[in-house]
Length: 295
Image (cartoon, rainbow, N blue to C red):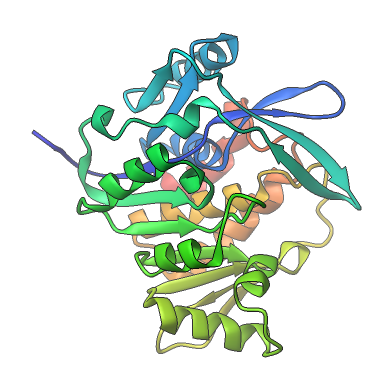
């Protein structure tokens, strides 16, 4: 019998981010978003795949320790756990996403029972392999509306495939550079974002702009904006977009007004860039947000 509680289902890559200083931290956009949602108490279901290796054991153990549902975490007997080599160029993170990893071989026939209500979060990177793309397509046949986090990583994307996927989404999140790459014209950002919303039929299009905040476009209303606190120290911008997405999803599931959701998403992303890494393993980091927004 299907689970009737509204839950976020997240499908995509889970991996280790390896930094030049030798650190290896848990990562992957869907994993990061799921981790934050679990810390908020929203019981996410993560669908991904790890290798039968030490990295996979580390990921599974971390999820168990945080009380996260691991029923959607598959194990591949042959291919290793995902890995990304992270570098910095002009202060911006650069990613070398290694190919032929466990998350490229998601099995659509090994999905756990899915909730009847909630939403489905996925990105564009998971579609770089036929098996994982087929798994996402299987999930899209279900009742959950799609929150698409556009994530254009060369060479793992095409305009045609990305545009087709965007037309299936109720909510679209992408950054300013991704909007420019998908719609390379000279119109102001607001006009291009609204044109994208109309072309895809999305209910909301959220454009993140780094230190300039974010803008939300929805039909019948003026764009909503959030601006981060410029006084906040920035330690590491890796995972800022994932932090932002997690609160957008929380707001959709809890029925917050769009302006409230956008403001809270900006606040949380600002807090996360003050961390070293995309997530915190300290429950105390999340407690003020959980008490204020979910108490």
